[in-house]
Length: 418
Image 1 (tube, one colour):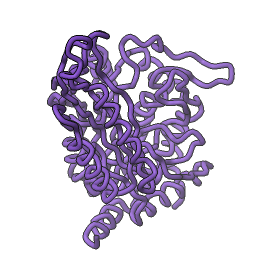
Image 2: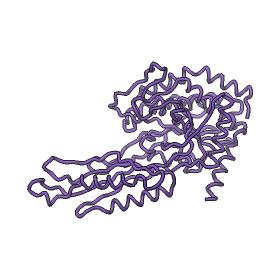
Image 3: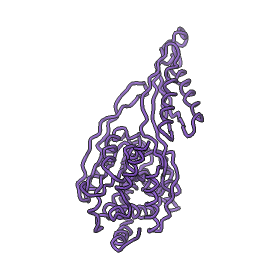
Image 4: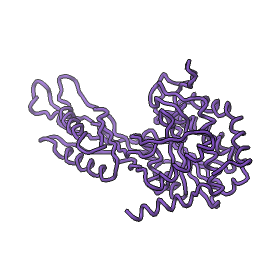
């Protein structure tokens, strides 16, 4: 793999675009687009539709259905979602790339964390600047620059920007799977790990809610007739927590318990909410079996109902992934970037793409840290750095120096041998 004059021209163009790439991301961060803030998500969607309209095909909407939500009272409702944004360029090209990102953040409409500032050490500090409005700006910059390359016609691409990644991609998961089936290589723009490394293996994840129903009663006059749902929820939570350490790499986080009543009333409803992380499909099956046992062990007059599911399968660092990461490392070396990687317990759309057989790198966004907190930050010099890396990956896919179809075939071969 080597750089030629045409490659260098694209890279120089991106170097000149640095302030624009950063300023665009900073402006996007001023739009609160928390996963459940529908008005903010819609404003962000409109901004992105306009931004991506400079590419060779017009972006379009893909409507998403509502996803189920368990309320604090145990009732099942629906969470609506705005449309995902899709862009398909040159679907007839011999090499097909799938690029994904999400325009929702973890910060609700009421959060006090609403704008980007610059810290004394130079880092940009703001909501979504790393995860992942900075990453989307990097993606767009790389695609715009790649279109200047004489071999651009050799690569087609599908872009999907979703509004629900931070709450599990439940609504957008079928679209991610559909896009993945049509690609050779996937590029996703989650931020790099805190030290700048890429995420290699990823655990899988599931989000669950157990609704417990008991029987209300007066705490003084008729205490023995009541069936305390909060106490049963506490038992369930303890049993779930006890699963930690029983199987290597499997963790269960009890995130929240809803429930309660006036002090003179035995509470009749409670909800236990938890997340699981696991390194393999076998581990996920074991965990689901253990949860089923816990749910069915309720006491007399109590009933527990399980909601939720495994939302993302594990993403092992298999041979096809290793080949892809090796190619990315080689491309990085041409730019003077030392590309490293290590496992992550986090999950993202890269898990979804992998589950549909698409080899992918899912941490091509900016360098930063403290995501999902009000200390979230990104380093300004990483915007051009990462845009150049993505553009070079696309250029080397176009030249054949990175064998996209061969990487996809390697994933297929691995699937057929297991």
